[in-house]
Image 1 (cartoon, rainbow, N blue to C red):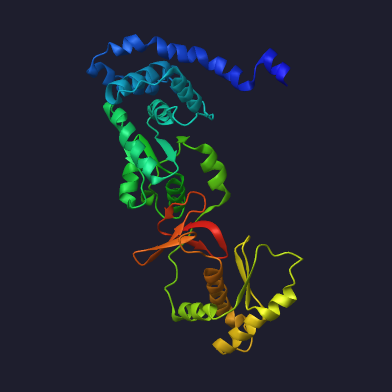
Image 2 (cartoon, rainbow, N blue to C red; image 1 turned 180 degrees about the vertical axis):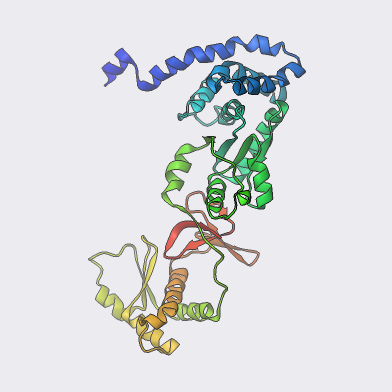
Length: 357
């Protein structure tokens, strides 16, 4: 493979070679745009939008648009995108992945690509991994966008529907993958079009694409109605679970003597799968504690459910690991990022699912 790479070059090198002439066109415009007055530079956005309305494409205006946002970033932030960052913006515009190391200026690359692809007026989503980055990047890069006459929005957890709708109607909208995802799910549950908050999905730039599209994508986003109000049965089930004798195994397999465990423990905790299973001894105690003849009778399904969830909560869920208690409220901790997931609850039977009420 090394010999063939040497003769013909790798795929990435061949593709970068095709992008090189486009990058050179952008750099060749540097002196021309640097000489523009403030009014003329700011007026380029209107010109680009008119050209697109008259039939030109994003690719047609790419050199001039990137030269514009490059000069604007220099005047507003004191940062002028390097040639490698221009290449990154072109790669993103082509719908491909631009791999960049920490410190190489991904935020500025996204800024250039976002400006270019916002010019058709259909909206651009910039997807980040957490609320802090979404807010910071929207504020910092927003200075450049506003300088050039574009509107900026940022989707944060605490926003109501009207505020979200306003943010999505902006030319460029920053937010996390979870916020965008849950808004999409909610939009598919509304009855009237006017109740939707998102206006469409034309172009998106995904930061930390490996984390968002691989790591976090392993668990689905699930949306549901409001949970049932707490009843006395929750308290009774919790009190009962705390009175039982657990037995913990790293992983349930054939080597574990389940008959022996059933005789010497009330429920079994499987640490790997995060499950808690009641034993025959535990069932007998439950029937005596709650005064029922057969715990597995269909009439006792609600009671059995509460017992199972109480066993799982007491045996598998760890404070400050799986959840935290803040201001009297239990808040789930994201297993991948460690950040708090406000307003969400565990999916029944699947502690790894992310669910929003």
